[in-house]
Amino acid sequence: MPMIEVQHLTKRYRDRVAVEDLTFQVEEGEILGFLGPNGAGKSTTMKILTGFLPPSEGTARVGGFDVFEQPLEVKRRIGYLPETPPLYPEMTVRGYLQFVGSLKGLPGRGLKAEVERVAGLTGVTHVMDRVIQNLSKGYKQRVGIAQALLGSPPVLILDEPTEGLDPTQRAEVRALIKSLAGKHTVILSTHILPEVTVTCEKVLIINQGKIVAYDEIRKLAHLHGQAENVSLEEIFIKLTAA
Amino acid sequence: MRTALAIARKELSIYFTTPWAYAVFTAMVALSSFFFVGLLQQFKQVQDMARLMGWDHMPPDYNVYRNLTDGVVVQLWGTILIITLFVAPFLSMRLFAEEKRNKTFELLMTAPVRPIEIVLGKYLGGLGIISATLGLTIVFPVLLSSFGRAESGTALEWSTVLLGYAGLLVWGATCMAVGMFISSLTESQMLAALLTFVVLLPWMLLSGVAQSTEEPLRSVLAYLSFDSQLQNMLKGVMDVQSMVFFASVILFSLLLTHRTVEAQRWA
Image (tube, rainbow over all chains, first blue to last red; front, side, top):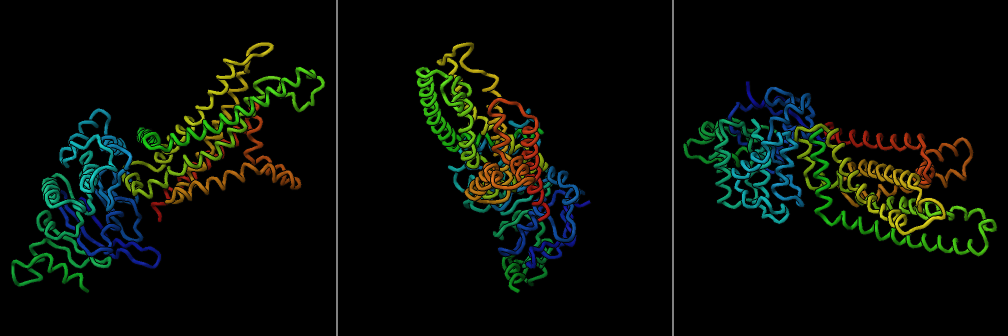
């Protein structure tokens, strides 16, 4: 059974269609790269998958549970990093992570150790007692990722996780995400195309709310260019130009 | 329920790590001290006058000034009631509006937490901060009872004082519930505070409007008015009807907040 299963998903805001008839699935342990120009509907799709927004039509299932019918079961299985990391500027990193841990219902005893674990993974251990509003953008982003990893949920939905990071940090986060493959099912949206080629096996490209490509990167390259070395960037530009 | 407590704890910690709580505390203490001193002076004047003329020759209106409880504390509670009306919107405005503006509302809504737990957690946090604000004013009766004298018995009649204080707390809880609901409707904290105030103040003053209307509208308005519901409690008369009234207003506000939070899922 696929971990994430989306069927004919449509989202309308009044007469504007944000996402139209999306169908795709992600197998357990797979990393799916989610690409598209700004405003293509990536964030909307992610918001529906996490149960923040209801779909207008169609269904989305995570771990076999419908996001609309059984939202709590779905939310228990998802770690989510929204576009804007959801941080409380007045809190310290430690206080914030502990709060999110208790929101996720992590048992009190293991909570401290779990907070330390995700802080270690995302490299925020040495800023744990600083107030979030004083952190740099890169650290804020990393705290956001740490928050999603808390409780190691089987599904991770990361909306532009490398946004605002410098090249070194970006490489670190990329390595981190890659190391999650197999244990976690990941949907990752990004603008930075080389990132996808490094971390993901499969890509889903959407444009104006519709799927324009959904395949393994290797096959896409094969499909859209005679040369083996055609870059994802060229494919992306070609597909989203219309 | 554990998550509701975690949310309440977070709310309180944010109130106390930002200057908000302290600014509101200062406003509350400064304003109520000002009125407290005024009430003491007035009390002393009437007492001095009565000593010259004798209570029998004083206008009956002045009878409340025969003891500190009715002459100072009950009137002070009446004043603090009004101050609460002004400061509570500033405490309740951020409850939901700030989460929406900060985009942290998304965190709460995508965590495995039921909307009811979010609402209860937020409300508990709000109750904590308003109780702390009102808690500061208990210093005035304590001062009176340690420095005041009465001709017979203790300086203050504590049962009356505390019942009035309980009335104040219920009033604070009502303001926070209404304020929380309004805060859940908007992203703007300023708008939330202003609207809360615009709802609470006329509601408070309904009894005035009632005076100029005919029955049966008159009793309905008088019943709905916060002011007339609170009067008895502040004077130290336990009134089940008022308790039921305030409990209903609070429950109704919580229910509306819950619907608003849940409506997010249907948007």
